[in-house]
Image (tube, rainbow, N blue to C red):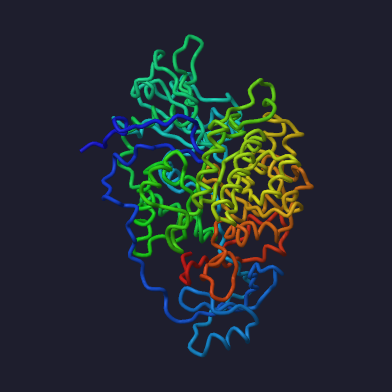
Length: 584
């Protein structure tokens, strides 16, 4: 039987897409899901038995003193002891299995505090036409042209990661470019930010999009001068209205692809992923899909997740609240998207982008943002607001001040409300974040990959100096984290360390963006271990190597506190352990 189309089941929500891109809100109609899938509890194997000692390595527990130890013992799924080799061996007992790791360095497992598991999984099989493969738009189009003959009849050609801010050529893909690849095969390409997509004429025709099709509120179709759609799809509504007709979306093995994403994260030392937008694809059943992933010990990382506000009522109706779950899978926050992407020029700014009168757009009315934050905080949720532009951060601060007040009034104290990306940050905003006790999570790849484009083409050098102000946040006493926003940038914790410590530009090796915002490597490590655990309300169980905590750790070939910071990304990940079991 041919794959079913998503289109008949599509429910388009007003407003822009969430960060990371909620691409397929109607996917649930295409897969057979058991009733109350979100209540499913996976069958998990018993914890490992026996005691294992790792010695001969430098152990960095990431405790307050950032001390150094000689060995670590694990009993079952928990840490038994950390300290000198003699003391750890004595605690472990004569029956312990001793593993020598000479010259290695052992750290807590890295925590990815902001990624998008299922959207990344669903795009994983699409052709990568992004800047890490192709320097120019023409090269990306040539690649699509080279593979179009492999597309089966009735199927679509799909691409991902296109980024005109980093690839030389036109600032967007239109039907003019994509129709040269094919006028018969429908083609859709997603922007790396996942706030845009691009379609050829055949894809528009398959979706029934014509000159007479009205724009979806806050999510318009790009148009040629005569009013006909030009293939540019801005925001969730427009993207879904075309992509919903791609028949391959109904035949994808989401579980297999999501497990592959998590396994790849494990190979780079990640033991916990926090999904920032759960529910955008399947609503509460997405939690059930997570648990399906975990069945039979099939999930190589832990998951923390934030409920996406666009589907939030369904979670309320399902009875899912903050803290629901266990050490493997747990709800931690309520996610609201307030603007778009600065590199895509949809982040909401105080002043316009360079060479433009456009200052971006809010994806939610500021009054609605305040009321939503206030309501969810009163229910006990940590509130996480996506805010890239400085105007969006202004609005987020107003909303989170209301959240802090309502949480306190309801008896919910330490909620650690978050600002996601928090990209263009002024001094007075840093002071307000500190005053309110908020915690930002920085997409540090904005500096490394896009710093040159921000400086020269998008916002100019003065505002580029306000990107990802990690050192200034530390100076203000703010705890912050680093993230990839996969699939915007790959999950690569060591690269994130490099970016925060050096702030070197990808396209200008040796050039540093805002040297005063560089941080010590110890601070960057905390941002991806202990502070990330704290930000995700999990510091009682992960984030540091302490007796009694879950045995989540990573073994590196070199000590990141001793290598040349320029080579942090090059350190080899030798092993990753989660819950006392080696996963890589």
